[in-house]
View 1: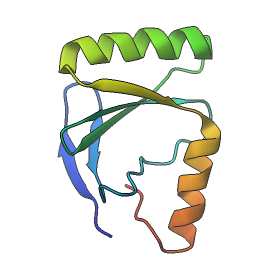
View 2: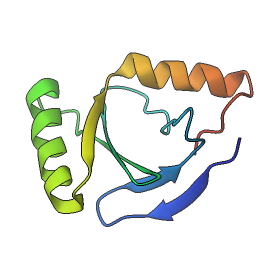
View 3: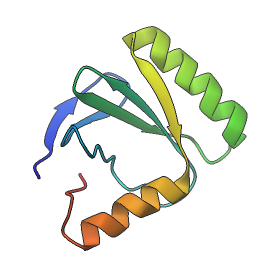
Length: 93
């Protein structure tokens, strides 16, 4: 499974297998993920932000800028992605 790197004004963009889209592992907190036509954008929330409200607000702002759907991933999802990477099943950028 390969992953391609691209850039975006507000975040790093990762493209991965369409069956199993994985974002980069974030050590703590949450990440906001926007899924559009074959791309995934993630942006780590600042630790000082209140997670639920901060994630929703940032997700709404990014969705408005990019015009794609928004999904908020919690740490357990990112941990699962890291576990898959350790098993060699996916590549995390």
